[in-house]
Length: 264
Image 1: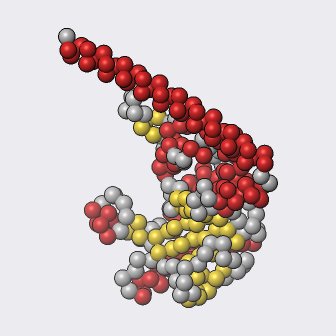
Image 2 (image 1 turned 90 degrees about the vertical axis):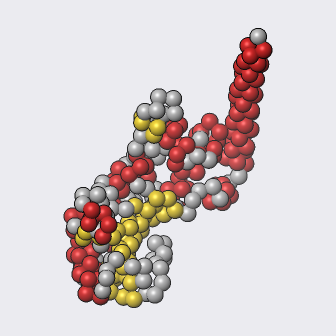
Image 3 (image 1 turned 45 degrees about the vertical axis):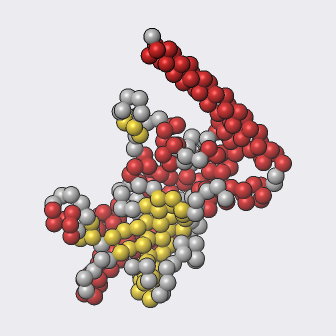
């Protein structure tokens, strides 16, 4: 009898907590929408952009997981769900239209795309997919606004094809380096493309071989981008810059400092 009474009390308590949580969530959404509406209607765009600058990251890394499905906590199956995706990549409430409103989220995303640096690795086709996908679903494609990307590449690839490859790495094939730049010409004109290349060389001779592979693989594409009005850069080990002209000629210059993607 006592156990039944305790169970009934527990059920009533859970029901009450759930009701209070729903009420608080509804109130929070209403208050946030009201605040964001005031921001949109009472502040000029210049001041709104200052607000957005405090809400968005300076950089964001885009990898293969960005487009993968997420785990459904109920079914324990991996499926795509917009709400779960946002919880993984944009957990803050100001990225959600039910809290901030469509117009606020759209402007926030515009500012994010326009001012943040998006960092990619050597995943083939990932830049193209990112630029042509409205993942946040506000009617904006990243290729219309993104102005700065970085591509981080390595002379060695560590994969699970063999024990030696996983532990010590194997030379990254030129085709893989080239494939990492697919889609960069989808960026708006004047955008910046900076490639950061790490040699991981054991001696100077091996480093020269790695740099030669990078230059012969990447510079034709980077030179073409530069000729079409893009700002391009190729950094080696964070301290050496490959200077590229529009014809594809290049030279190595010691900088002694990390290059800023927006520094040109």
